[in-house]
Length: 199
Image (cartoon, rainbow, N blue to C red; front, side, top):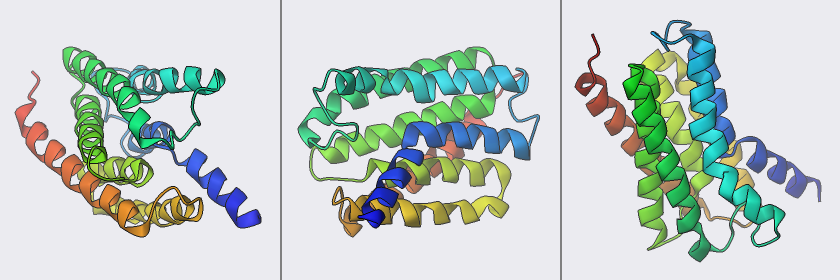
């Protein structure tokens, strides 16, 4: 069925690790000085390593071995992969902090706290990591770049549709992922933006 294929493509194209890359590039394009004092290419590279490559590496290895599907449909097996991601985000935040790249530090922390929230909720009920993986980054983009970028929240609509179409989540689970990510990402940005001051 064509609609299922489209839903599958959307789910892959807008996964949280890939959307991290998109958000880093959007921030750079909108404000080329955002990653000072590092050169933008180096800051983006750090982000790609700790937000995209390292968090998914254990999952990719297990998928290659045939131990699990790429979306980790079995909820009970998700915590292990969340823990790898959380560790990667913390290391990325630490390195960004040492290098005094304020926005990159906050981005890593936003990923950390949103992912931690999703993990904790997963122990009680299903929640969409896909919609949270869009809503969190869009929230920090709006925080850093302004309300001009609020239209990016619209990306959540096709992503939620895709997850529902693939029977991975219900509407309520996609809404829960969205709301939790917006709240946690905003609070992270709001608190850390003033807390982090570099000379």
